[in-house]
Length: 172
Image (tube, rainbow, N blue to C red):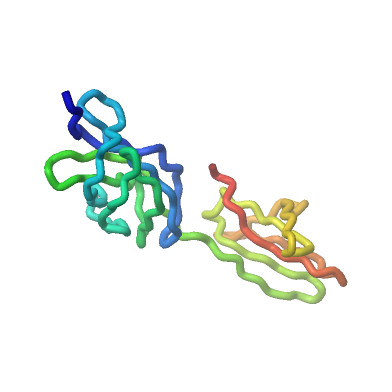
């Protein structure tokens, strides 16, 4: 007996993800015997359970019953559940994720100090530094930032050496 489509299964999606920043997903077509349906090659429509738009809106190109690729969400969301649907009653739901706005660094100079600010809501981010970008060798800034109101502040004494800084998400 030939196996037929029963539902779609999503690989685990790490949370949070970031608004307008593509993230990878894996979707499997699952047959009635609960195995990956390796001959599935249909179109799957992507949406969310609360109406937030998912890009791309549909997928083709399943390989051996699975699709791996990037999707993008263009707005903030809490407990967003992505949905894959073939349009004929077969669907599957992903785990709930949150979407956040990616924080940005703001800088100012005060005397011989470089002041770096970022939102305090971004507690899962680590400020890192590198003396070169080719190749970059990122290491955490040695001193912890100060929390002032709704911002983190890192005060760094400027020297003759050039340093580069970035925020790295450490929440996964």
